[in-house]
Picture 1 (cartoon, rainbow, N blue to C red):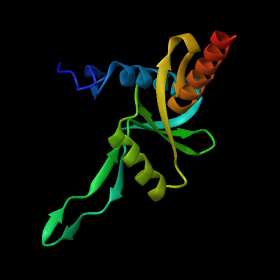
Picture 2 (cartoon, rainbow, N blue to C red; picture 1 turned 135 degrees about the vertical axis):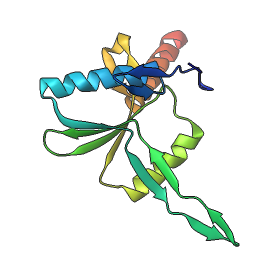
Picture 3 (cartoon, rainbow, N blue to C red; picture 1 turned 90 degrees about the vertical axis):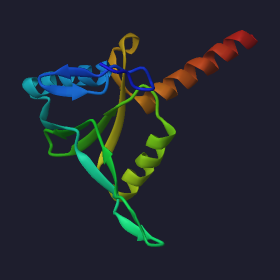
Length: 143
C-alpha cells in the first residue's frame, strides 16, 4: 500500500482501512476497552463540519470538514473525539482551533503511542514530559 508524506503506511483491519499502523493499533486497543466494559461505544471516522459552504465574489467555496479517527462514548455518556498523531501538522492546528470554536463541549484528544511510557498518551502530555526531561538534562549539564 502507498505511504503518506509522513511515512505512514495504510493498514486494513476488520475490513476498515486506517491511515497508519498506529491508528490500527489504537482501533485494536479501543475494541479491547469496549469488550472490557471500559467504554460504552466507539465510532470510526466521525465527520465534523468546521465551515459551511459559501460564495465569495461569485465563486463557490466548499464546506470544510474535519474527519477524526474515532469518537469514543464513555460509560458516563460523555464523548471524546480522538485523533492518532505522531506530530501535529500546521493544517491540523488550524482545524483544531475551528473544532474547539464550533464544538466547545466535545473533548478532542490527540493520542500517540510510547511503549517506554506504558502505551497510549495524549500528545500534549508527551510534549510536557519531553520539556521537563530536556530542562532536567540542561540543568544536569550546567552543574
